[in-house]
Image (cartoon, rainbow, N blue to C red; front, side):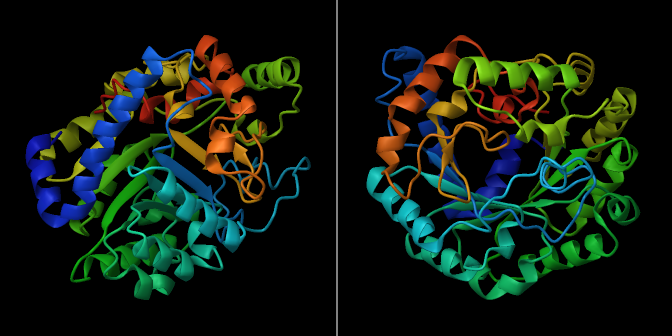
Length: 391
């Protein structure tokens, strides 16, 4: 998109040689894992080590974005049905995962999320450990806390940032709060002023309020030096999907579902026509920054909005053979967005004991046959699709 992806990739290799070599190796390893998964349906309890570990560092956040499934107006931690959770991942357990993952396999990386990952009380210690172990790590953040950690970010080639912004200053203030846009963009500029700046991508969640300023937002972000803009789709479920999920989890797993409630909304009224118009303007601008969506064609947004019960491209969750999700209490879950199922605790068992344990094996065998009602809107079906093609 814009200039050729070959040119974009070449520029990124020059700017971030270590990060891009790691990314290229990961793509090769992940494709091999896809092939292994398809060829070995009888080995769901003997899966090679995870290629990615997603660590939920905490559940705290300094923002209250209305659309957030955790802390938003309908979020699971602001609802009457909220559940107590540990404040943050125990530091000893975080160390254990990083060091054990290193012993378990050569090709792996980490994703740090929350809540707000940069509010983790041991973030500086964690960043230093990741640098020491040469562990490539993506940090999912609202960007407000970057300024507090510049000392451990500078000269650390193993950290990359995925920062949430949802519009121009005026629109972002409606969605994320007053002063957030300036604070976050200033923090990105500070990162880009480093002698060896980190890779920075923007996560833009497409919503009715911001679809009309998509082009203008991307133009502003390109001008401050970001490396990528990823246009996310808002995760929304119908009440019927939520009810079906509750029944299926109870009947097939004997588990009570509640974490899906933050996603249930009446509709997702984003204009496909406006999205196509904005996308065409971006395409004509020919910026040297990769601006993409999980959609293969902009008009596929119609399927996402109007046929929410199905994914337009893929219904098989390859993630269960690729990535391990760790919650704040050390429990491993097959699905970070809907952590109602849990497969033992890393405080008690090793990565391999859980990854190839009986609960995970049974879930993989189950998910080979059918998906859960909430799966159709999950970004993992796009992100971990072996045939992934994006705008």
